[in-house]
Structures are given as C-alpha cells and as structure tokens.
Length: 111
Length: 228
Image 1 (spheres, rainbow over the protein chains, first blue to last red):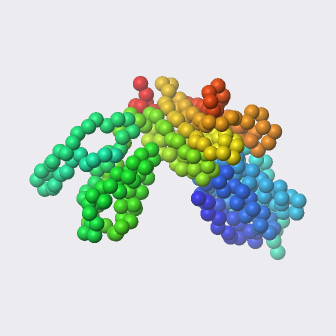
Image 2: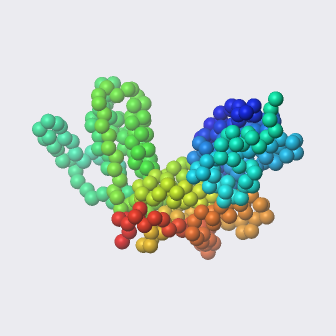
C-alpha cells in the first residue's frame, strides 16, 4: 500500500513516499524514517491519503531528529492529500516545503 | 448475481430470453461475450460459476474495480482465447446510498476508503469534496477500529446518503464504546481533523454502539439529479 523510494537532494537523503498512510502502516513508516541518518527530506506529493496516524508517524521522526540534531522537512504541493492533512493537523510551517529543493535549502549545505 | 438472462448471437441477433426481472437498487448487471467464461480447457459452467461468485463478492465495490477484478480472476485458469467484451453496470438509484461493512481491522481501512471514493465518484462530487470527505470518514473509521472493540473483534459499518440540500451524510457505526475525552493528544488531533473537513460532526452514543455522522454540503450540480 505504501512504497518508499530513496534518493538524494542537494546532498541530503530523500525519501519519496507513494501510496496511502494510515494506522495499518504508520508505525512501519515511523521506524523507517528513524533509521535514516542525517537531515532528511520526505516527499509526500504522491501520497493519496494520509490521516492523523500518518502525521504522528512523520512527527515522531522529526521529534527523534531534534534529540540528535537531525531535522526532517516534508514536501507537499498545494492541493495534495498530504498538504490538506498537514495543514489541518497544524503541522508547523517550518517543517513543510513545496519542493524538494526548498526543503533541502532549510538544512546546512553539504560539502 | 444470478443466472444468465439473455443469450444473443451476432449477426442476425437471434436472441434467446432466458429470464427476466426488475433490478433492485444496487444490483449489478454484467454483460459479457462468451470468451470471458469459456475456454477449450474448462467447461463454461465453471466459468459462469466463477463469474457469479466473484461479482457477488465485489457487489459493493466501484464498477471499474469489479470489471478489472473479473477480467483478472476469470483468466486465472488460462489466458483468454477469444476477444472479450465486459460491461458492468449498477442499478442507479442505489448510488444515493452507500452501505459498506468491514471487520474492525486496520488492514481493512484502505478498502473502506476505496469503496467510499467509488461512491463519491459515482455521485460526481468534486475532487476537493471527495478529499475532505474521505479524510473525515477515514479518521472516524480508524477511530472505530482502534477503540471500539478494545482488542476484540467486531464490525464497522459505513452508511452514506444524500440529503435534499446537497448534504452528504456518512455514518460510521461500531458496536463498541467511544472513548470520551481521551488524554492522548494524538486522538485529539484525529477528532480535530474530522471536525475541520466536514460541516458538522454528530456523535450518537444512545444505541448499543457508537455512531459518528459526518455531514458536508457539496457543490449542488454534482448531486442535482440524484436528489428529490
């Protein structure tokens, strides 16, 4: 139901999620996010559905990152399912960007 | 899904009427060429039986999904040897109401949303209305699955209808008890999301279980022909 592809954007790890996120797979997603080392960009444009369980999973990755100095920025264009849910759930704007490049620009540059 | 009603042979269209009936709301009409059910390697009766069983089990799904599933299931015992034409229709008035029941299991939530989307698309609601309604119902259904049965088993029922003022009302029912004011901030977020994407959330705990009704007025042109 949820595919996770990995990549790199501006030298930072990139996760591209495709599919639907709900209570059936949110915990798996959270542990997958927490295994990524360094600042991470998570692209949600191809996510067709995400509910509050999914938001909790994404925020848990951000929270763990804060402890270790790691940050996570979520990418979603306006009008996508993820943009709607993140906005309504009150996810802080500094955790959300409208493109992968804009997200990566929030991190210190990689040498 | 019952017995074949009509057999027709082209050209000349000598048709043999094998039965007749009036479809009830929600009945499926499946029209197909014999290539769908017949192969040299297995009898047509087996193909017909498989068609009946498969279509029957998918009765509440969107028709395009039923078509896809039938084509793949009927090809399971061997590739098609002939051209196949398959049309699936549903008796129209039933699109006014949706009834979908599923076991209170997280793995069932995606299927529930797919059925809901199919119903909304058949009604012709806008993408934005669909997105909001699916999110609200998804949250309510997940809440039922998570809390209603406290580790036991049970069913969740989703019932959708169209009111006269273009308001869609979708009830999510379960047989368990709603956890009133949970201290869990996460569940607070779920309820907040639900309330933000529909016009009204009604909570009914008077019956044996819990019913959450999610009401959203949609763009009038979408449901004009379905109301009244």
